[in-house]
Image 1 (cartoon, rainbow over the protein chains, first blue to last red):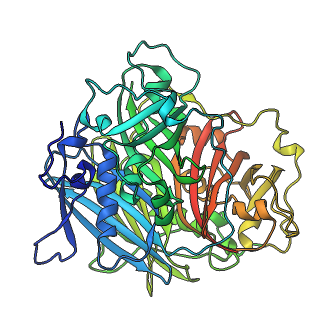
Image 2 (image 1 turned 90 degrees about the vertical axis):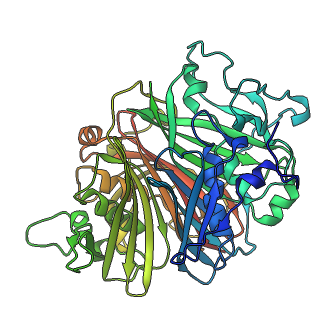
Length: 280
Length: 280
């Protein structure tokens, strides 16, 4: 099913592999590439591109701490093949570090990102957002059928409680676009920052849920705040996390949607927001 | 009250003035500076820095369209004085344009931004977020007293319906941090993209509302999605807009908050999200 190396790497780990560029003038550049296991309808799933951008800071020798914020701007279609990542730590403070990252292909910049990394300290903590209550466990919900879908949704085990991707675009407009689902990598994989960044982009475009109608869409900007640190990610492991998503506003070719990713124990792992281009 | 030039510019217009840098090697750099009318407790109000960053793309001769997304990362304290803005259009497509912008002071980068600009087309549009209903008009709500506060809150006319900034930090923890308020520039000023970007940062840190307790705080990343185009901004003019804000999660030194800015007629002008450092 998946073109995999003989060393049995998870396809997501294959997809985010970066090697140091050999360009003499660019000692901190990385080369990655698109991966067929995460192909979307056109080009790669944006979540893997987001994960690669983050990874180019994670792997940088000057990296401090763990990511707390990531914004990815999708500047142009990513062509299948190599991508060159240039990550610059533009400011390093005592406990925070600010990054500008660019993804290049032959014709120019295809994506940009900014990231904030931090060394965290324990403080008073509290979840103010409300996790949906009285939900069935992941085991009690059937997996979304993925037959006939592009490779990318086949790499996620999605179990919709509400607001599934329509199986037919019957143009029956809904009153809202809210989705609630259990989701994990398929095959199972222990959660880390790279996969959490990719999961933030797995919420289908809200306009499909809302209008049940085809539209050309493309995410232009994706922001994720990482509330989880690596210790919390380890606690989650490879279990399903709960995803909740909804749209806020659709106007003149752009809409925004907001999502939350929750641990089964009710910790908010990440909140994520994106602005999406659409043509109806 | 305000140190104003003799030409009676609005203090916000003074605060975002940029002049082209005279550096020979940098034809598209701009020089701005902090403005005493927008001073915060330490350094300038982040909203004016965000507006300056946006403005350096707005004024750039290669600019295409109007802003739809802006992310500002506050990398280091901004010192009072000059700020050098370097705006680069890293990718220009037929109807979208992607920017990376840096703000420099003597010791290095103090802020970065990415922005997406777009030429919009009319499409099916709908507000899915819910504007609070049955609210008193701005005229029926008293203005927040600003005596003794830094300059920045004096530059806004804020009329809280719910979740006002505590007048005393009595440490009576609240169950939530939601605020609802009417807000406009003070003195009145017609809304534009720069002031909408600044307004996005006027929501006080949610931890003050929630815990009614002092804390060291600092926004590290601020994202604004502009749903309004310039025609809609013109309709709003200099009237109050409705602001709604709440926190999602506080954990290990960082919390995120989300806000909405609504026209009096119920159009969502902007949605905005930020990640804030705190030390309790």
